[in-house]
Image (tube, rainbow, N blue to C red; front, side):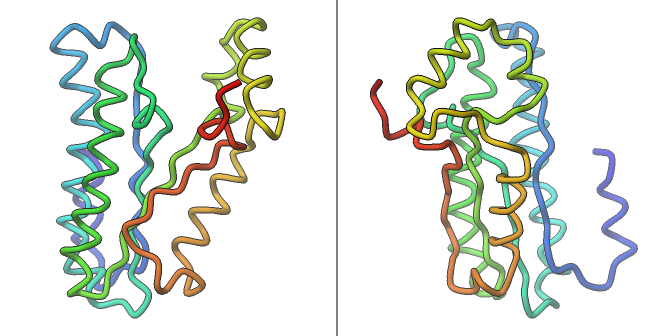
Length: 176
């Protein structure tokens, strides 16, 4: 995978952010399904394993994975994406347990509906339904996800590990 060689030039690493992702296409076709799983889940697994010795040398070691609210809800047209994000949640918890012996914290952020190119292509009727269900009555901003990643990566979260934090304006707790 591209980027893995960059780790070999480092002596130490403080933070690993596993945020690569893709979507789209027919995820019910095996080739597309496997590609989505590879980019989301397999890459997060590999980067975490390869970064572990470098993170072990840090006093503030942290891995932050990107999950999604689809890990909770699923998405009929995106079985690979939803499955990968559900697996990211379990990888986060499993690695939090295993990597603790090396003083490495592992957490994940689970974005809800965030103003991105994906939201830009949603029809207005669907956008209204999403806003109506969201207690904060708005889509999130990318900076709000970045702020959670920064928190997880900081000493302020020194006793936080194995956490998957939804950042969704309350979408996941509202039925309307």
